[in-house]
Image (cartoon, rainbow, N blue to C red; front, side, top):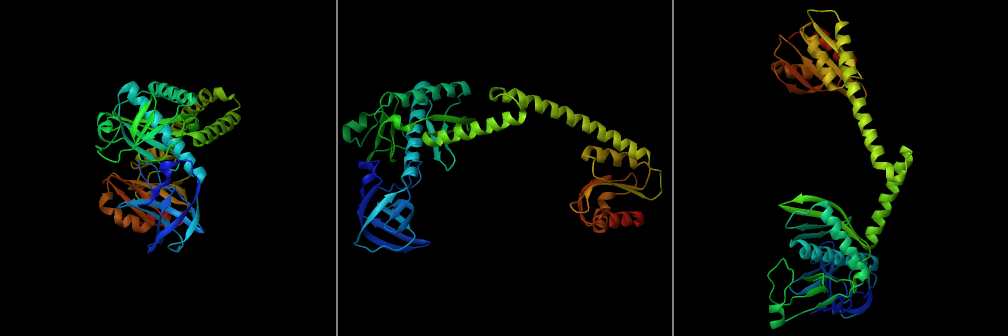
Length: 384
């Protein structure tokens, strides 16, 4: 068995170890050591990375009681090597994981909801709980969590056995009976967990809940702790500062300023839509009736206005076609007729304009790939 140094000292970042075995595997080599501070993936926390001698540790996992270190080059069995963790990565993961225990313990204590899912990703961690919580309730949990950090409580971590384990009350997603490792934060949480943690809550640093959404009858929150939370707060502050500069308002007035911009934009969109419909009517009125087909090319009208134009032209010709776009980017089309079954003729029409699309007997739509002049000539001469 490999000695698990990460259980003896979660802050151990450098150590020496003897290579017991080195086996070639897909994409590199699998190495076992006599002792290791590299934590294998577990409990929702990713595996540590770092170095063993000159070899890069890419992944660590435990299989059938063996801790396998995936490395990028072979190592000599029986030799001793200096080993080093990517410490900043490990520390941040411990900050986040211990912070998750604080949040989950408080939610259980205050509301009685269980943590039913936990994932630590590259950008944030997600936690799922068995009941719904409002944003106000979560902000109260966040306040209590940061007060727990401020209290700098010691974490008590141990492997209870026998009668002690049997009478112990703790959070766990699994029904465990042996080799149970308990992580306790006095007055806040007691939970079964296999991952390394900080020594005191003060090491967690800032705890920040970012989002919350309903999930399978409960709530899923995203959060960050420690330096990850500080950096996220800095990014958000920079964004708010940039937006306040663009809108020429103070930072605390960004939200109402954006709301005003959105209201103004909505009014402008409504006005543009009205003008588009009016332009479509004017264009239709300007075109003389014909027994053949009519084709209009436009770079201004939106789809509702384009459809209105076709509807108005359908009473003036056999087939009415409206195209919006350009020769360089392609054309989107709407084609309509009162007398021709366009669904039946769609294949022939699309072949003539280099298009793809379909619809109803009265109207089809899609995209055309040929240039405007080629399309215009085809529709001028085409007879169903």
